[in-house]
Length: 83
Length: 338
Image 1 (cartoon, rainbow over the protein chains, first blue to last red):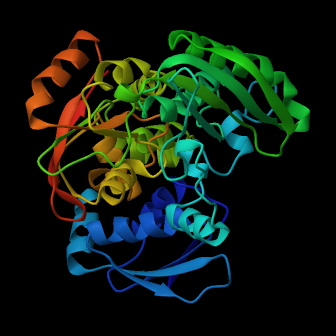
Image 2: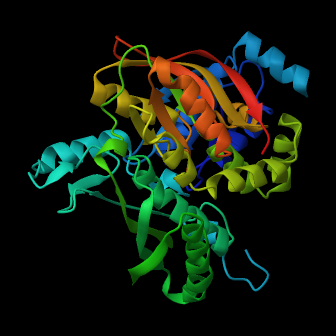
Image 3: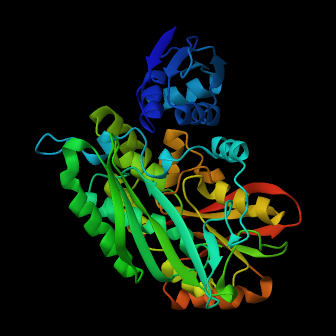
């Protein structure tokens, strides 16, 4: 399971770092994102939903958030096309 | 980082411009817990863009305060934007005469040299509004911030409130949206991340940033003067985005709002998509944004003529309904270059 840490990062950097990380995951791999900037959580969820990725919130320490991002078939096809 | 190794203004803060505002829900909770009472001496107080007090000569004194952290690195431009943004709340009430600003300034102890250019920028912007800096207060603060307490005057006939909108009216906005994605993109410096930006948008990031700065440094005074006697309601579009401004009018006037058209800075839809930001649903923070104005059907031609004659940008973006809440009904997106 791949991980990306966007703690201490503020928008729009978390979205760009997660997009970078999603370029490297395989089609059966999940990406775990740990962050601490509340607007970043909302934007990352919207980013993934808009592009066909599944997003699940996971438990995280106080003041932080953790998202599990699962590539769907559609999202992976789009990602592969852009490589 | 600047050439002499001092941190850039935007590197001194974790949130930029209107993004540093306390979020809408927390603010509402805070006000509920505090239970600030209405005062008989004031026509309007908390919940509106500005407080309004009737003077003995019958004119209305409008007062408001606004300050925020740097959204860009140039201290002069930061000062211009801070002044435009602070005065915008007064303009949203239709008050654009005798504009005075008491500056609120916060500076890191090691970076007080940025004060003069910030104040020069504020003075320059206030001069465009026919206003002036009349005093202020400066503190040491880990995050720099600038803004001010604004007073302005108007008449009862020209006073605008958020609760005056009625079903059937047309909504206008006086600046395009997209400040948050435009300025966010401008802060990206890492080559690999810059590549993502270049791949996503057809327009140079510098051009998008320059447009955003041009809009942010445009005072809402001219727009306010043009529409004050014709509009039924107004507010300014700021940190809570267009959606927040719409919610303010919808809640205060007990009406519904439907948004069908969105003018945006050219290039910002692609950036917002890249960043996951809700530009198409009005959720991007619009530092020093335009006015959101409600107009009776019979007054539409007069308002459009007044804005055009004053040289103010405007677009019809939606309508007031007899429903409730705010609906972004798959708005058409119009990309605007300054």
